[in-house]
Every structure is written in structure tokens, then in C-alpha cells.
Image 1 (cartoon, rainbow, N blue to C red):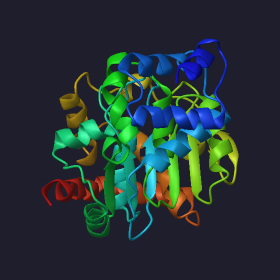
Image 2: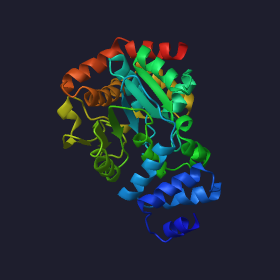
Image 3: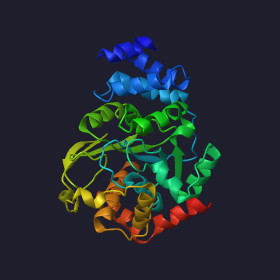
Length: 328
């Protein structure tokens, strides 16, 4: 491990095997907290390389507890780490999609650099994390939605949870989360915090035989924020899109900000599902949901997808779905 730390401290990148071994060392507790913090800190000032991403991703997947789902769903996930403190848009989108008939196999975690991650808000609202394929399949088959709390399926991630929270800044594990869903998924809708990461994801996801969409709003959001144009990459195209092109008005960032506590984030979450939120909040969830919808059903046009997702909120189907998930 010392050689890898020395290499990183001198400004060099790791090759794929060294990157793989770094994750393995973390998982096998060959590193103490100080060494792990140092390894993470080196990547705060520079992006990871293609080789490093491959090594980290392959190690995390090889070390994960695999999940075999009866039917393939899509993952809807953001990297986090954009510093914007928006409400839980990707998690809401996942529930909206499930209510609209799209099977969802969501992978998520506690927040490390924001108020509320997907695991935080779902746990706060009473959702019980599932630990086995049988439990996840029961949720997926009954409700079109299952949720994998990352540390339960990735021992290496569990080892760094407290350290990431204490550091309070974005680390390369933010980048890894959306790429290491342990289930047999059929597609990905991913929001990323900068264009560099979007291009890196696009390079790697092109190698997978999955439908995928990567989005990044040019103001720095890891989702379609409707505050600015956004860049979209997929296995079919690359575009820069204005909100008005999709029938939405450009909005102010303050209109989609989260609260300052998990409880406040939970209240906002419920207000969207009950269709008691602002138009701006609903529109942001709808457009992200609709673009993700196309990852599972690319034959549907975007306006149809928008209508399906809007109806899932306005009919309160998504809210009823959450209640069933919590009470089952």
C-alpha cells in the first residue's frame, strides 16, 4: 500500500491493477483510517483516470454481494457531490417511474457531502432496507421498486462510510456509486456533477450492453435542474438541450433547494409525492423521470413519457406506492 500512496502523493495515477488492489486493501482492512483518508484526499484535487475507474469499478463489483432479480429494472441515480443541496430528485424519480410501470432497481447510500441522500430520506420515512435477493424480488415483483442500500452489498463501501462523512467533501466514491449496482439491471439513468465525469461515464458505459442516459446541467447540478441548459449523453446521441426545447421554463436554483435537515428533506419529498409541491419542484422530478423512462422504453416519445410521469404524481400513485413499500 505504501508504494501506491507514494505514487499518488507524487501526482502519478494508478494503473488498473493498482486501482483494483487499492479497493481490495480497503475491503480487507489492510489500511487504517488515516491511510484511507489520504488515498481519498489525493483525488479531491484531480479527476480519476479511465484506468483507475476500471480498476475501482471492477474491484467493487467483484467484492459485492450479487443480487439476482427476477426481472431487470433500471437504476436512477446521481453521483451527488455537486454542492447544490437539491431535494432528493433521483429517488423521487425512481418512485414516480415505478408508479408509471417501469421496474426500478435503485442503488443508493447515505449522503456524504449533502444533507440527505437516498438512503437517508427513505430510512427517515420508514422504509426498511432489504438485505437479500428474495426480499428485493418481493418488492420488485409487488411494487415495481426495490432499493439496495450500498453498504449492505458492498463491504468496501461500508469501510469508508464514516470517513467520507467526516471528510464532508466529494470523493471518488461519489463517482463509483452509480456504476456498481450489484443487480442485473437493464439500463441506467445517471446524473453527474461535471462534464469531465460525464465524458468518463460515457466512455465506460458504451462498453456495456445497456440503455443509458447521462445528464449534467451546465450550472453544475448532477441532474436536469431546469436552471440552465443540460448536456445529455446516451448510447444513441450527445446533445446540449435547453429546458424550453422540452416545454419547460428555466427556473431559479433556490426553487429546488432542499431543507437543512433530513426531516425537512423528508417533508419536501412527501409534498412532491402528494402533488402539494411547487410547479418548479414537480417539473424537475417529471423531466428527470421522463428521460429515465426512455432508458427502459426507448420506443416511447419524450412527451408521452412526460405525461405518464406527471400522471403518476398528480394521481398520487407514486405516494400510494411509497406507503405500500413502507407498510409491507
